[in-house]
Image 1 (spheres, rainbow, N blue to C red):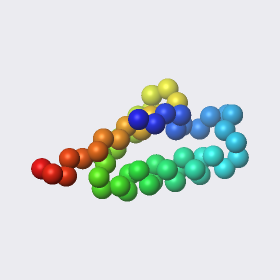
Image 2: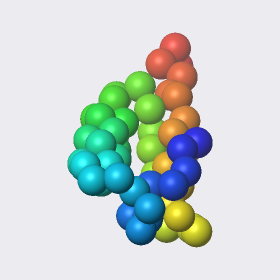
Image 3: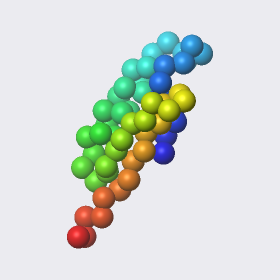
Length: 53
């Protein structure tokens, strides 16, 4: 679980790109199921797939 993914006024310059790159990376990982929630400051929930079944 990762939080603070929605833009915040106190983020340093360039931080939004890092967040976007991280989200793109996580969503491209075939071993994870991910979902983004717009709760509070933004949450990503990632669950590892069981590839043995």
